[in-house]
Figure 1 (cartoon, helix red, strand yellow):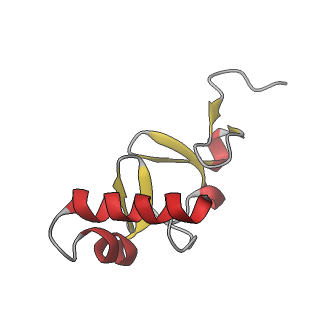
Figure 2 (cartoon, one colour):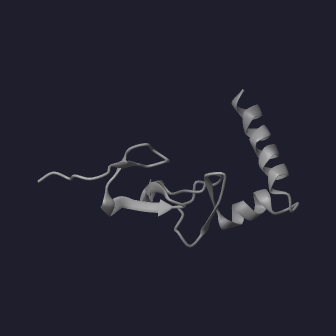
Length: 88
C-alpha cells in the first residue's frame, strides 16, 4: 500500500512531511523536529512560538528582537543588516 494525497514540503528542510510528522504553524508545514527558533535553534511547540514575516522564533527571542523599542520594522531591519554583514 502506498501513501497517496498531497505531499507537503517542510519549510525548514524542504523534505516531504507525512501526516504523522506534520506540524502546521500559520498554515506552513514543518516536521515536528524541524520547527525551531530561527535565533537560538531551540525546538518550538505551537504554544510557545511567535512569527514575523514567515520566520519563527521562541517567544523570549521574539520579544528580545522585536519588542524592545516598540518598533518591529526597525529591529527586524537591523537584525537583517547584521546578518548580511556576517555573510559577506
